[in-house]
Image 1 (cartoon, rainbow, N blue to C red):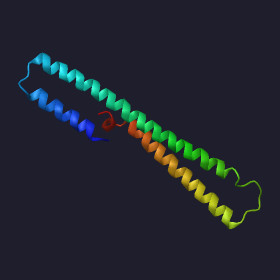
Image 2: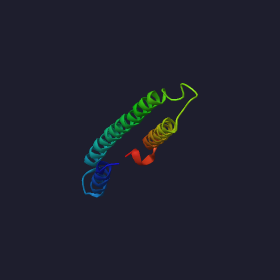
Image 3: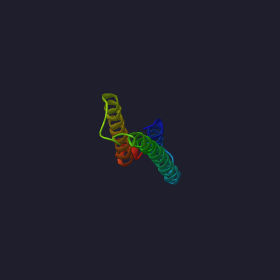
Image 4: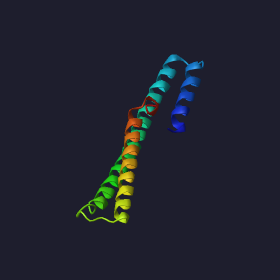
Length: 110
């Protein structure tokens, strides 16, 4: 998702292959693990905020759609507008689903 996981991986590779003493390597590894956990939480918070934004969009679109079909007499313009609202709701739901799947994806877990 970002360059930070790649940088952590690179630092870990360099440190673990270096001639540093074991205690120093262990300390660096522990620090890198903490950084990875922090980055994972930061990414998850960002993705959750994005999913919440999709939910907000869906709510707005549903409110707009609420005016549709209040009576049985519809003209083609209203039907077309409702069709577009349904398509936008579907797109926002699809994006929200993709975002939530990304949270549980192994690639998101640094």
